Length: 469
Image 1: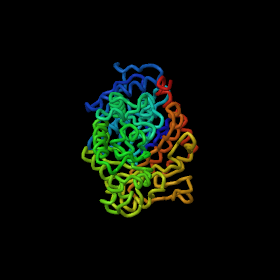
Image 2 (image 1 turned 45 degrees about the horizontal axis):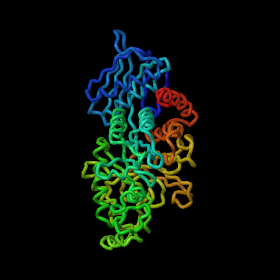
Image 3 (image 1 turned 120 degrees about the horizontal axis):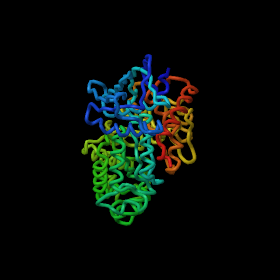
Image 4 (image 1 turned 45 degrees about the vertical axis):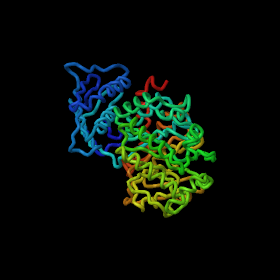
């Protein structure tokens, strides 16, 4: 008899009953028209796992009914497996997640135990970030990562589309910004948007400004520097009105391409204040602002960018990049990813009332030079911030928040890694993190979880099949 713990994340409730049913002959029916998109995806995944295409129409097939029940919460999942299978969810994502649970739960022979499953995540934001600007990633590898997100029920995949090395987002009005050989076409991005949406994964695009902008400054200096020859290194000129007009256009175009994205990430981290102090155009604008300094200039930009995406009906996210010093207030409807505990700390941000996403560098970062194993991630909890850097306020003693803090989830970040290494870097770390967001309280000791992960990792790699080549 199969145990519930073959599921990652572990389901809240699994009641096992006598009997099994086979998926080698299955008829899949979408009782809601919008669920039709998941059927060919699920069929293809079954084919990959079973080694041959199941019979999807026969007199003896196992009926699988997919249904959205609006009386359920958005991510609530109910699965009933008898001779007939019902997957009921509060949304498309929940039903899609239910189909991925069947892939995990079934045996290698395609058998499922009769059971009743009730499940729902503790927190809604289960994210992963790919840095596709420092090392360009092909659409093929991004699709693989989306498959990883689907299999382990991550809800969001953030694409870090811009940085000093390249601007990967194509623009009609500013064609010079897209770096040759290191950018996407609009069609490629639109296809990725649909690919993710059909698999219950929402993309979060990021245009990282006002810092990390060396490629913009080099491509269009009259717009993104002051237009008067002042060096701006890797930050756009926040005293130049032309820069604001361009940013508004870029963000509006971004929302148009990423049409399903609830969240738009604005970057806003690691901006060198001295760049603004060295620019007379920026200094002139500072003098017109409350506080009259570079921090005020940064905050005024955050407000501008946030209002731009809010007008498009989206929610802004930024990195922890503004300081805790008093000044122009940052509205509480801007979600903060707290990562370094240097510019600002999770406890001070929580006290100020912000919604937080935990992206603590330790253990939720992996780079070519540093990363923490899945076991370390599994021992972490979503209310804790750690850091190895001695300048971080979380270095000597982790920051641990209580249940009053408005933490909506966590995000793993893969920085500066080449596409050929991504699956290997993520395939064990991601399920360990997702488990600790879906279930805040640890459900089992690491050795037991690790054994289940080994089984499901093998199954996930089989699903990728030829995609891994």
